[in-house]
Image (cartoon, rainbow over all chains, first blue to last red; front, side, top):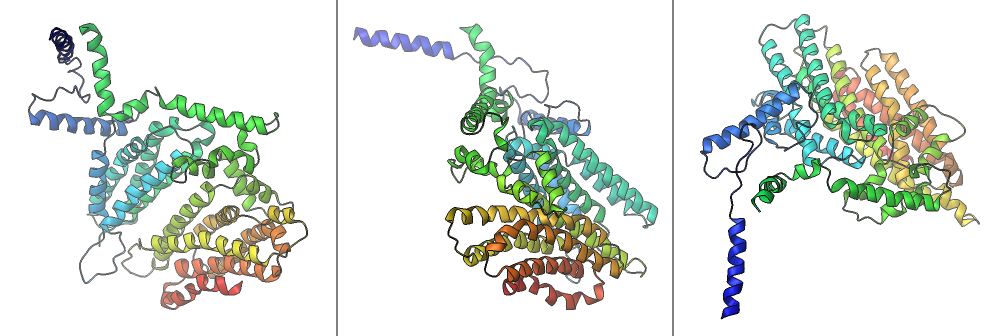
Length: 221
Length: 302
């Protein structure tokens, strides 16, 4: 009986030590969850996630800090961008025009997701030092410049087409392509050995070039 | 107790919820991979001459020994097919468009056949053909007041043809070489000269490189120029193919038939591309049947 009581006393003391809830320290830093989300409104939780996505978009548009996108990957941004592009790029589905030239909704999806997976797999096979989802996250977020180019091209397409307007569309989507490639190079460039950097960068460039080609070729139907 | 808790709990929690942070800080992953590389280095140095700096320059058989023990389903198993540097790939591409008698390409590819070049050259060729095929289509209709639409589905056709060509033809050729090779007195000599499937895929993949610039030029709508480009591309890469495979072909009983088959396949591929993707659209319905025999005739011509 005595020994039992002693044991109980020991355990009691141990549990008492672990019950302390850690205090939140970095509340002022937006985008870094503080993990004490039990007693905050759902609205705050959703807004914090949205802010994290928005901050990542800002990092893509102004690629300066290298580690910004690699920390805490998520796939929300790529999903939104990919769905948006697929919706705009898909060919018309009217019955009389069966052989519309544009890609189907699913084809854009497949190109974006399978493409980024193949590019990621390529850099892993070359011996790159990056996790698969980090790389897919970066490649997806870097679609933002090409999406902006697509929106601009779509607005230009509302006007009557001339050669000058085609040239403007061409320039815009090429700028989107270069921007996307540069941004992803900033984020992913360090993961490869220097003598293999070109081998890893070339597929990334090809990926964004193909998507820019889709953007340029998209016309009113 | 409280002092100890305050700092590491956050770290611990962030570890659990975001596994990438774990990767990011390189606490554990890097040392492991370095350790693996070091082990391979040790093995390479142990077996090779001490003069060679890096184990990647060592012969294929000895270098892949520690890697081939990896399981078929892991990523590391496939890393040996992508173990190339930028300079290697550039060297091989240059070698694939300059026919030489001294068989340098054979030695390049014999030491370490890779799949990086064949795969990305094929992918590039697919999209180059699709894009410039669309440009050609646009140029054909530029004068007429025709509402031009781009055809995304060219990508699927090009992808099917090219991947079939790069994967199946080397397998068929490998089988034919294996079966028609005359049995020599020296067994070891034969084993060295008959190339493996991987080497054949590598040679075929790099031999497609010449078609990338050619397919861009194909979009120029001059009939004679298109045919000249077909012959030029076939001549360049077909001769490299033949020169590379010459030692193996010499041993075969049907060496003339085999080399004729290789060149014919290459020519049919080029002509099929040109006729289907870049030629005048009026004949597209008649071209479709002639394009199909490209694959079918590959077996018959051997």
